[in-house]
Length: 130
Length: 79
Image (cartoon, rainbow over all chains, first blue to last red; front, side, top):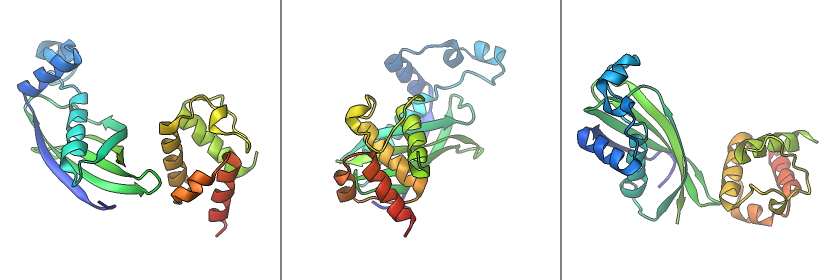
């Protein structure tokens, strides 16, 4: 793995994903479960939890890299636009830096709505090669 | 405090989330409660990015205090 290597995948945030995330996190805030509540707050419908995207980053790090001998050291993410139920996201990730002393890699990522290309979230992770 | 040490101090405060932290050339990880092994990685990563330079593992392992790290940074900046 080296700087410039790219990875991509698609994820759909459907009801099953949302419900499993609620089961794990215990976060059933009406912003995520009630269209009526979310609309009253100015959104189109119930928002999917931003941290669902972090679950997909876990899959990127744990399953999509050429090696499984990795661990996550840190993660930064900015949520740019809401994700609604049924949205298919394209995850684009690229190795943007390497650190021989760890040894480790920085991977920058972007989630885009597949249908509209709207940027939904972006961030970066620091991983250690173990 | 010289410029390099001043800039490192800002990075340390940011990474270690301690706005009151004052580091000196003599400072070591034992002097700063938040400076654990994971934060050490974050500190070096942030310093490498800030100064646009890379350290070798041997360099990092040789540092006995912040001052020795500063010396390596200044040597690289003056190349």
